[in-house]
Length: 188
Image 1: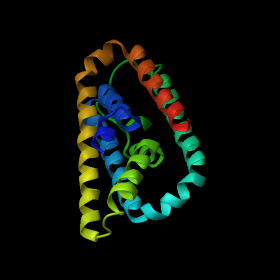
Image 2: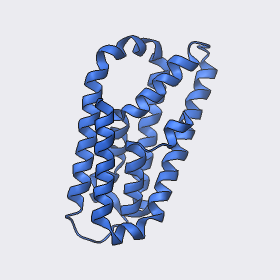
Image 3: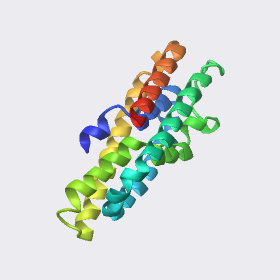
Image 4: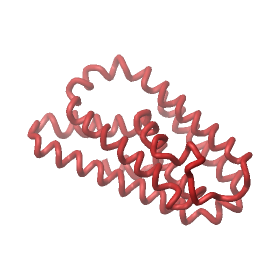
């Protein structure tokens, strides 16, 4: 769980991009959106892990393609943002890539975290206990780890903000390429 939370993935790339582009203040809506989306996802995965284990073989191809398409959309959005004004805004309310809603949407379509949470609960937790307290504690642990990893990637984006301002086109191409890679690996 810790490893998958801190490794590069769609949420982490977008957290870094948002903080590099808008600063920590501008990225906070997105980060809290991912936290909210991930929290809902963790609860859902915990409660339905046994049921999902039987449904995943049938649903997985469709979910992979939807998630992959959304990652491509994010990549295109990043590339198109390069054409906008060259200054960096501290208030991200005008950008769809750093809003609370986009954070929730990304979590809904993020196959990496779906698979991580489904694996955590269906393979490691619910086979040993269905105790409400134990499952609740694992949900809280998963949410805390996710928040720390997203905050870490946002801080990395903040540190690279000056580099971003100077090399915006190259940075956006790199982030878009990383999301395209995530999209391809999500559907394969």
